[in-house]
Image (cartoon, rainbow, N blue to C red; front, side, top):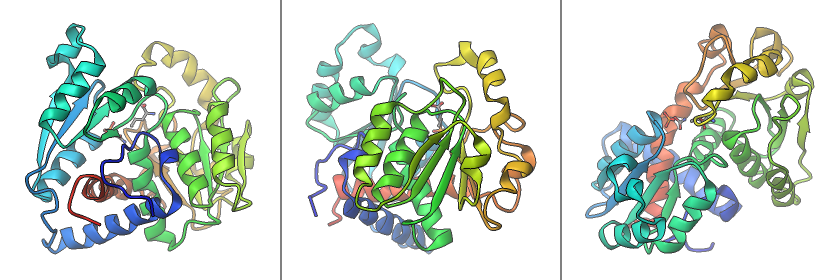
Length: 313
Ligand code: CP
Ligand code: NVA
């Protein structure tokens, strides 16, 4: 297996299937150890900077709590308080921060900005969400499916809604583990073509189906997992009304869920808008594993950090 030490985590496409399974296995082990208060202090003496250019509840708190649980020091930085906001370059920011900290976790807008940061930084950089990808979320999602189904290959995941950052990472993560990923979006909101192509090439050994459709019912048919996300992502607020109209037929509700397998799981990365992309009864219903996904963020991110900068082999 290619070594993890010092490796950036900017997109799931940078990681191999073996690496992905290793993170999931360690995440699962850490979850059990956490419940009995026996987590090893694998990040003792390590400092991790967390920079947020957009709001966050789960990502921020799960990283902060998880790093502390492993004996490390999380340093939360609001980008408004950094010289970055006054024009200091991303390169100088990256070079400087990596003289102080062992890793940089950043939530920002453009993927290329994050790539520039990673290029300049000696310390590994982890993507905490960009407009293009949300890889940490999908680590948690895959662990959640694995916990409920015991396998990932051959699972059919139907993603209904916007072809956004979460959809992109699901396509790549799903492809890496041999899942069928069917995406249904309104016209004009499809996932980026380069990501779909990449997913198809990553998944070429599995003969799996990566499909992009317009019809949510066709995507949901006999699915093992129904996944949705907000119709308006952070930074797109001025399009909210137009999007509400375009996405109205794409709500995940009881009628759509009835098309999936009887025991299908319902997933959402949160935050959610009940009555928009998902009905309240489905979000809060017995098929929902949405809060398990949220919890698993903390466990998989601990595994990721321990492999990249900690004492885990
Ligand atoms: N799912 C997720 O990343 O949530 P936050 O925006 O609250 O971090
Ligand atoms: N697609 C959403 C995900 C939030 C966790 C956004 O980017 O706002």
